[in-house]
Amino acid sequence: MEMKRVIALMVSIIVFTNGCASMFHGTSEQIHVRSEEPNTRFFMNEREIGKGTTAVTTIPKKDLSRAILRAEKEGFNSKSTTIPTEFDAVTLLGILIDCGLISILVVDFAATGATDRAAQNDFILTPEAK
Image (cartoon, rainbow, N blue to C red):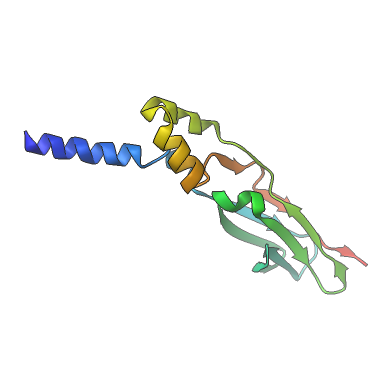
């Protein structure tokens, strides 16, 4: 009898500490950036993420709305963009688990930011000649 309670408690903890969006779509997004200009330096906010014609970075979902991608090359005007986001409807499945109190509000919204996802994962940022 005691073993059944332990198993039930463990299953409850696993279910209630994960939000649906974070379980199914993760808590970060992989973003690909490309330039048609060789030797381009790519940045996400102020952090360099690559050099050449392509770069890939992983961004936590809770940071997506503040992320700015930038491409620069000496002698060229830099090009930048924000990452558009959209609501991840899978989040709403949390209503079936606990009426959304923990799975949506606490886990997906506050802790992981998984209620949003990148509306676009591939970007072309080519610096323009001056």
